[in-house]
Image 1 (tube, protein in one colour):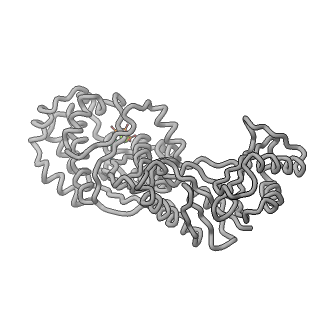
Image 2 (tube, protein in one colour):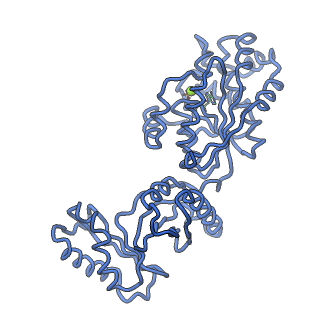
Image 3 (cartoon, protein in one colour):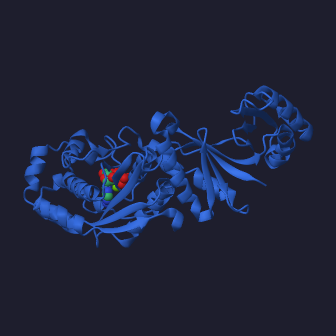
Length: 393
Ligand code: ATP
Ligand code: MG
């Protein structure tokens, strides 16, 4: 059987003259992700990328689930390739979709004919094929408004394709098409969702995690790695930096007013991340902050955090409620990992009464008790790098 996966381009169809460049990126990403399953021939035609395995025995279900996580595709379908011959289409469709047709009660046929030289019009294809399917599967009836399955016939330039209801793709923009950014990732619920949301907009991710051994354990870091593995199924491989943060936290605790320690710690995280980001060609930072969620995320605290760096800071969750973030975390598969118990460096050093309306000038003056530049550079230099790729684990 001559089967392929049809991958329908999403937003990039709006890209005018740059479209070709975005298409090439999508092809490159798709080829890399599918390479775990063998060799593929990928061609771009009419807002679609057609992925054809070199080997007939390739696991197409596994390929479909990989492709559903590639940003840039609006929809996808496993499809049968046929010659552009209506008799061939009529005789093959019912048996190709037989499993799906047997398990539903209503259907409709949808025909798209981009090759206008094909002898039948789309309505003719729908009506003749619809009748044929009713004969072959007498339990079925037609429902044009809300069918259980849509039988799709696409008559394209090179061939005809038959497939069932199109699956939804991951949407968004191709990985790397918007540049690179560094996400500050904790083991919590929010930052993995923030990372995923920005990766969806085409940013290639670098991740930075602050660890404070012995206050935080190996388990906390393993948890962050598992979260990044999940995200990398969508974003592609992630460069991961673990930053030693113990000394900075101890110095803040010993030398700064307790009620400002959280905001000062957050500013250190931003500064260190900005150094790592700049070294790794990243043009922005990403955090999982949301207005009002905790004391360090009041308007005043966010302003102080923002002022620590000149790089743009993306906070995609800024206007989201916790339950919206939780729903997103469940969808992308990070929630169950995020709720595992662990110690984060923030929770270990949390002050009893953090200042909710910190003023930048007092924060800066409190920080002057520390050798900030040295602490920032030492921490960035001490960061351990590894690469996380969930598809290769
Ligand atoms: P999350 O669920 O992402 O942990 P949170 O609601 O617990 O977020 P905070 O602890 O205030 O919020 O952290 C705010 C943001 O700071 C996080 O979303 C994350 O981007 C960053 N952050 C916090 N802790 C760490 C850490 N240990 N390493 C790297 N980034 C961190
Ligand atoms: Mg946290």
